[in-house]
Image (cartoon, rainbow, N blue to C red):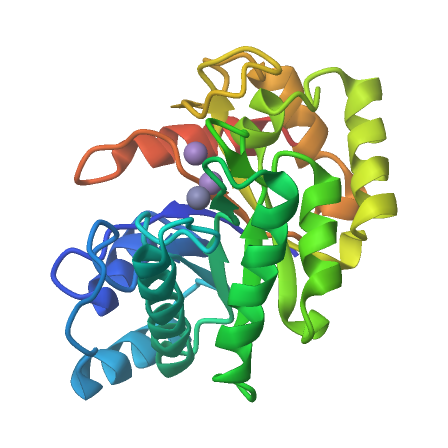
Length: 283
Ligand code: ZN
Ligand code: MN
Ligand code: MN
């Protein structure tokens, strides 16, 4: 089977429209927002829209869908009001995925501000336990994304993600997404072939490759270890084509869906260019 490849896809006009666009662009994997990503809450999905999404998806080439949560959610917010809102909003995001049959909800662990990493991690796990409790039999996974560690963001070390998982009661619900730009900015050198192998080995030892269910493929506008999160087109950043060749040709990573989150216009034609480059790296 060919590697599952695609990009974050617009849901302009309704979630089901994303399937049309992804199909048109030849994606076999996609990521969507199931609601406006800059808003806390939004009206429920309409039954008609849910059905349309499912039917279109079933008849499409798209074999993998992941949803990305709202940017406002912070599962370790210091402010109690924001923390409460974040937990309700995450629950809502999981419900939307469940209704749409989306198997993964990807999110950033959280930013601790001045609580400290240790307490931040505990609070994130507590948030997940509360939300999981309310969604006991949901199928959708809670997918932690690796971060660049910008500001006080947690998740820039594999150990931190593992620590969260250790504190989560329903561990079988936890999956991981590696964002290439984020890990690189966090200090993991995935550009150098030898070091790339070391990074994957480290991931496997600390978290376990069986939890890795998705890649966000983005080049990085910022240097290794910069801790700054800026996405760049594939090959134009500090990771470069060498770095992406490592990922595209690693046998253990072949079956893991890969999603672009690189800059794009309304028609997403830039995605086609980036995917062409990625496919060209496969030996
Ligand atoms: Zn993200
Ligand atoms: Mn990402
Ligand atoms: Mn990012």
